[in-house]
Image 1: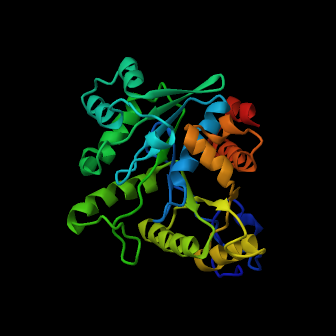
Image 2: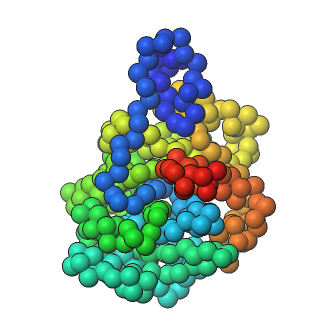
Image 3: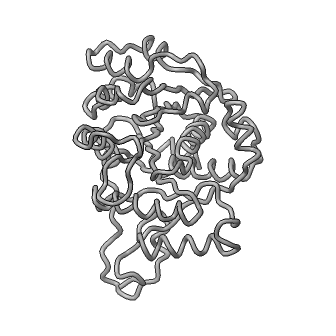
Length: 317
């Protein structure tokens, strides 16, 4: 058996110490039902930085020559438009869902209802989210599937910023939850996307409170589906909150309590991150040599390599 009795999940699960040759393989993620590679960013309550990571991952993929759509699907508090410095945005998600459902979403309408962001010589498309969290019922899994089918010829990858869960039997609750019965429908969409995304990036902070919240969220994932195998990312990593051995402590804690290996540590750079937010820019366009930017770039490349094949794989290698 492994050191935990169960083989740990994560990209580096093969590094686990084992003494039993009859171990079952690590759970693999189920294939997506979507015709496009969908990469979802999710995290627990407490603003671990999933929106920032989602926008920067999308930017890095665009820099690698991929056709990328960044989608704000946070039905609780959409904020990507603000973080990207966009004031006047098109209808975006709500209008595209309606047109796709009616089989009227043309390339021209798609381009009109999304924002083109120049990333060097490349382009990133951004689809703004709902203008009010009360409109969450407009977003259904079936309508999203129809939308993705409609734009599959124009997009290689979709990076999604997901909302946190509103209902959970422990403490993963949003303070604005008023009607539990109604919000169960919101979580049904979240669960469907967690299960069906091609890749899931789980974002955690690096202080003791963030670690606790991550473990609660991981328990939520385990209840949703035991086959989920997310990329686990520690965002804004620093040693000031956990001491000089913070990295080792986080790795040991997540491995022992959640059977999860950490795939990436994104260094904390308050000055660069604040400047990026002030200017509405991704880190790659603000400071290419930033250690945080380099870590996100490596993660983006790994996500693409894990889903690429043939000519695409050769291009990324």
